[in-house]
Length: 121
Image 1 (cartoon, helix red, strand yellow):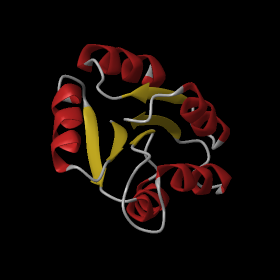
Image 2 (tube, helix red, strand yellow; image 1 turned 90 degrees about the vertical axis):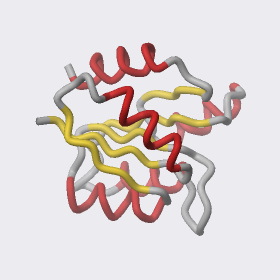
Image 3 (tube, rainbow, N blue to C red; image 1 turned 120 degrees about the vertical axis):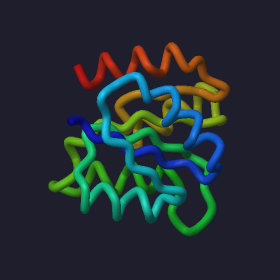
Image 4 (tube, rainbow, N blue to C red; image 1 turned 60 degrees about the vertical axis):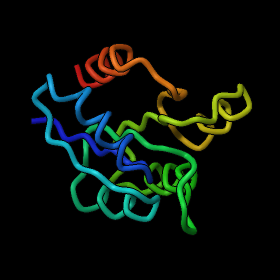
């Protein structure tokens, strides 16, 4: 079973993404900060991480992405940034941080599901 880590500081967003993915056979993990994203990624080695950028605390989604992608034990995790920051400069910055894909909020649940299925095969 493929593991997906959903990281967003808003519980409603985490729940919406989980509901969107409930059609698939996925083990869902959740975190609400960049620090939790790093810790869960290191402990659980998810196949896919759906990461918000703007989160409270010392580690935002971009820094968490950089850290996960630099770590030899987690660098193979696919990361899709799922964020309200939708400008082209934001997208470029996210991809430079190491993200594999970029989705702007609000997002189409159907498009997200298609992307997840494409990424996970």
